[in-house]
Amino acid sequence: SLFKIDLAGADDKGHLTKELLVDLNELGLENIEKFEGVAVIDARHIALVNDNDFGIQSEFGKKENKLSFKVESSPSYFIELSLLKKLY
Image (cartoon, rainbow, N blue to C red; front, side, top):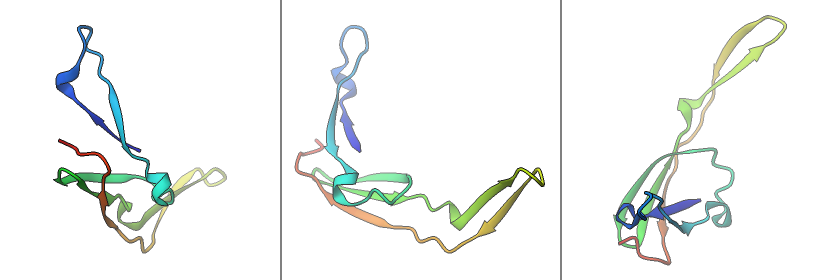
């Protein structure tokens, strides 16, 4: 999920409120493990870039007591979202 936080809107104790902008699971993006970057395009559009870890996977073998790595093809995605609410 992505939230909008207004830093100027802190209360006297410094608490902030957050507003849900978009639930990525509802958009069918639940298979993307983690997002690496978010960019604001304009008041109603953001771009998301996923972190593909360069296709590197690691495994720890308990019997061998060692860490092994393998490289797999893993695509990156650039996703532009149209928001229902304005960012600013």
